[in-house]
Image 1 (cartoon, one colour):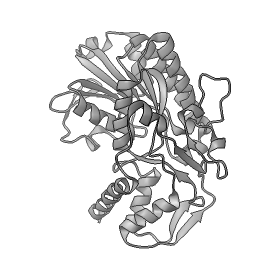
Image 2: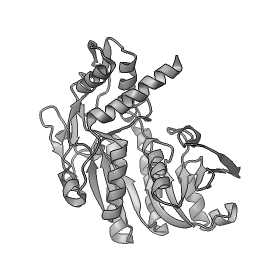
Image 3: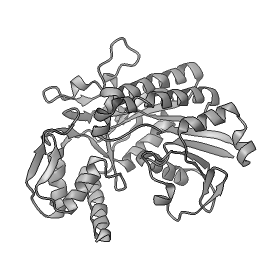
Image 4: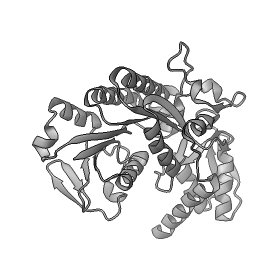
Amino acid sequence: MKFHVVSGACGFVGRHTVLQLLKRTPDNIIMVDDLSVGTHPSTWLPNFTSRKLKDVEIIGKEERLFYWQMDFRKFLHKIQEDPNWLKNEYGLNYELGDAFHFAAIVGGRAKIEGDPMAVALDLSIDAEFFNWIAKAKPERVLYPSSSAAYPINMQTESEAVALKEADINIDGYTLGMPDLTYGWTKMTGEFLAKIAARNYGISIVCIRPFSGYGEDQDLSYPVPAIARRAARKENPFEVWGSGKQGRDFVHIDDIMDCMFLAMDKIHDGTAINIGSGVLTSFIDLINLFSKFAGYTPTIKPLLDKPVGVHSRYCDMSFVKERLGWEPKISLEDGMKRVYDVALENLKREK
């Protein structure tokens, strides 16, 4: 009985991975999440049913989902202290499939800048994960890095360039300065992924998603928050910083599509970009949502708010050449989906 493991399974990317695994495979899925950020599976799984077996929640009529609400490190400790823990404790004949590692201390810009030492705990979570895969040897491993790993000196107002995978030279002698502790953690994870592949024979790929978004993303992230404010026709429309800072927005469906393809094609720890390759400013984003809402607000900059780097977008040529992949969802189509959901949510609240 094959089990895929998804850490951080209830977060934005984690839950989309679970839903994709349900569609793509007939296998079972181990979900681990302490809900420090994510939401319980009952809020996002269709036709939710479950039953409890000790401290695991077995979900769905087919009972393919097994959910532990706990710190992923605790789960790893248990499974390593007793390799037969799942069988002895829960009667599960456990054969390890793929491993997807999304457990992390995450948050918006305020969290990254306001509590960098808490974000550094990701180093602890990742260290436990990589030590486990070196021994357990999953069939394949997905490590989500981040665009925050790129050198910040390449993302200024005067020096902004489309970031290429080769701009982070893990195997070289010189590294640029990444974006605070979050960026350092992800760059360290990429280094450990290379070691896992080279020294332990692990099939692993790293992805560097840029600004992922989707209809069900938490309101602590900018895209759904801006969509909601446009749906409410806020005026003036506040924006953090000048609003001229830009990001590379990519829909979660495209991230999933590229991620699973990369796992099929890449096995040596190589990291790839996942983005649109287009730089969009937050003012442009507000104007797009305002167009959907049918009004023209006054934009009010909030210059005292944290904004991060000025311009962050990617070059997708390596992925196109290596995987033959390009994003399918345009910025306007993807953002319209987000706006429509925001509008429906507002109507339900009234």
